[in-house]
Length: 430
Image (cartoon, rainbow, N blue to C red):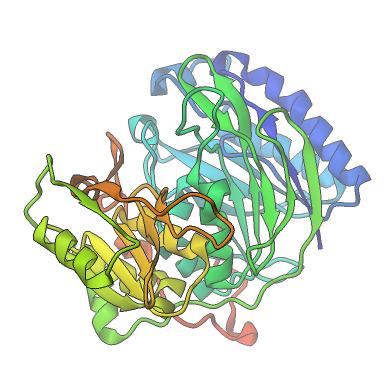
């Protein structure tokens, strides 16, 4: 199938009406390119930064029923599937949602963001249902932006048979203005595709909304091996197109013991918010490094390197209080190691007969073994063990609190003949 992503320059909620010409342009370009499916960003309309619920409810903002009608007409007019983010009004609450329309413009599915990010918590309620849906291309699933941070969301979708994941997003810049940093395009999307064996189609925003938020753009399509098929720049509103094949989903199969740990509350551990600055020499003796980290207060779990290929064991150890995950054995893809660190906010060390990589809780590289051709000598590295103690992505985004354990279903996807067409049916907007 041919997929398209219509990256969009961000607009403020005061300029929400200016979204529609951009959507129409992307839809026409996608149609001309022969796209079967077009993905648009998170909260395509009206904006991501709502200012307040009261501001959203003013008369100049179209209500969600009207927005869905518009999107459906666009899908029908161009005879292609459409996935678009919008603000959903449902039972007196607002949700950060994404709607899926088929070629006839029929509303097939609504996904509601489960893992709320920072300002989401000011005006949105979390979604409490995670399900795949049927399409002419096979079963697909929708994640919305920070849902990708919680591996259980993608795991639930592939456990429900999703062979392609669609990711409307608005990746916020974590770096200084104009220096674009975000874990999703850097490594997390690649890791999710590799881990679960499915392609992922990601559409983001670029630019800024007033002085509140800056986005990193970089919409992309990756295949089931995590290889990038198409990518957009950090700036501008280009359309990108790629051919993708549905993957062979690899849902996790936790042991009974791991399953009970995954669905239990995280262990209560003493938190040292000041922590300990410790200097280690990763190029030195492994035993000396391990001893120094433990003596400084690090709670270490030692795993086989193959355990980094799935989120399960790392998640279990982090929930039991581990602050350092030490993966021992043959090398695995760096994106997977960085994902294990970032999704749990822990330090990760990868080693066999020597240390090869150290990753910080934000997924950044703390230390990497010098290559044979490198002229840079391996040097000691300073680690602040407190960075792994407080599980905050932002001051209002606690990774444990944002887990919606009641939504998660992990295991083998159903056989095609057992999939009920209604299993992914949406609740209609109020």
